[in-house]
Structures are given as C-alpha cells and as structure tokens.
Image 1: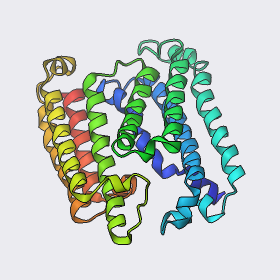
Image 2 (image 1 turned 135 degrees about the vertical axis):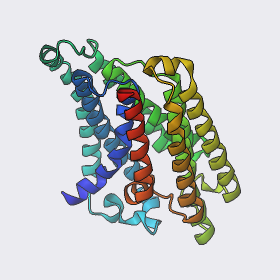
Image 3 (image 1 turned 45 degrees about the vertical axis):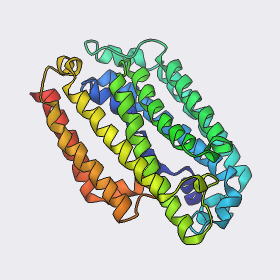
Image 4 (image 1 turned 180 degrees about the vertical axis):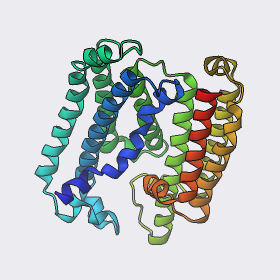
Length: 310
C-alpha cells in the first residue's frame, strides 16, 4: 500500500488548489453551496492527476531505471507491477469522472440547507467531468508524444493549470475572468521553465539528457525564459489589480497593494532556482521553503482583508 500511495503522488495534489481560485477571486469563499461544488471538483481532479502519474511512470519506466533519482519510483524499482499500475490508472480515471456526476444528486440537499446562497447550475457535474476528461486526454498525448518537444511541453503543463481553474469555474458557476486565465498560464509557465532548468543542470553534469527534449534547452535560454515570464506575470498582475472592472467588482481600489507580495514571491522563486538550484520539484520547494510560504500566506491574507473587509 505504501508503494501504491507513492505511485499516485498525493503530495502533488497541492497543485490542484488552483481549482479553488475562481471561488477565491470571485469573492464567494463564504458561499457553502459553491464551496461544496469546488471541493468535489478538487477531489475529482486529484484522482485524474494521479491517474496520469500512473500513466507517466508506465511510459517512462525504461528511462526512469537509468535515472539516479527516478529509478526509485515504484514501477521502475519493481515495487509495483506494471499491470497493477494500469488497473489503478483506469480505476482512478473512472472514479474521477463519476464523482462530479454523482455530486449532482447532492446539490438539491445543499440548496435546501442554504436556500439564500445559491448553488451550482444543473448539469455542472457533467461540465466538470467533461473538462477533467479533456485534461486527461491532453495529458495522455503529453506523456506519449508532446513532452518530446521543447517549449510545447511547458505550454501543455501550463494549460493543465488553466484547466484546473476552468473546472473550478464550472463547478461553482463562477465566470472565470481573462485575468485569472492569463495569470495562471504565465505563472505556471514561469515555474515550468524553472523546473526545466534543473534538467539542464543535470545534463551539464552527467552529459545525459534527463528528458528527450532537454537537449533543446540550455542554461542561457532557460534563464532568459524565466526572466521574461516572471516579468510578464508581474505586469499582468498589476494590470489586473488596477483594472476598473476589477475595482468595480470588489468595490475597492486597494488591490494594487498586494503586488509587493507577488514581486517578492517571484524574486524568491528565482533566487531558489538560479542561486540555489532547487527548482527540480516545485511542490517540494513550496512545502519546504518557509520564506515562500510566508509570502504566499501574507498575499492571501492581504487579498482576503481587502476584498472581504474593506
């Protein structure tokens, strides 16, 4: 069981908090009905992502066995049989699609309990399942073919995060703004390039490319890509905070004050990437770096204070 849990990588489920972004930016965190819809979508997306992790390890098993770190993965090490991983892959997919469909049965009860808070639109479970299905198919193509191509690979990863916020939007019947789509894509593209930098450094040390497309990257290109995406992300966030439509939606002109936390957060991530060479696993980096956690918490608290209390 320990190896099965390691295979589905529950620690990576942290990435799926993007599902709650429409709820957060939409100012609906205190709406119980919509929160239930977002929670179900989050759980479903976690299972779908774990299904893809199983597929990824199955596709990369031969390469993983030659990798100094990835050789310890459950399938590569032989701790989990390949047929078990295949069964688990499809089981997780089926449950992830069934969960939002079944959740539609609970919506009338939630609406009855909270009649004044509104609820998800009828059929939102089907919409959530459809987006998750699209995410799964995109990642099948990524695992088998698209990750071989530099730049396309990081764009696919960033698109996966955009699909996470779209799932959160359809699950809560909250319109996802263009700003949220742009910021999500740019931020995750920035982090994806930072992760590829770790592969480039490994290739420089060992002379062997960890991925098929690593040879199409080098340190100079990656550093420039990180700088560009970080700068554009910051500009996009500033434009979001000073946008008249956003000020009208939240009834405040003070969102621009949260920009300082975004700037410091980006600089800290660049420091960890370029100075410390610690960008190999963004999830572990965020979970272990207290400075990053404090900045993220300060940003979240300040944003909440401005939109809910001011």
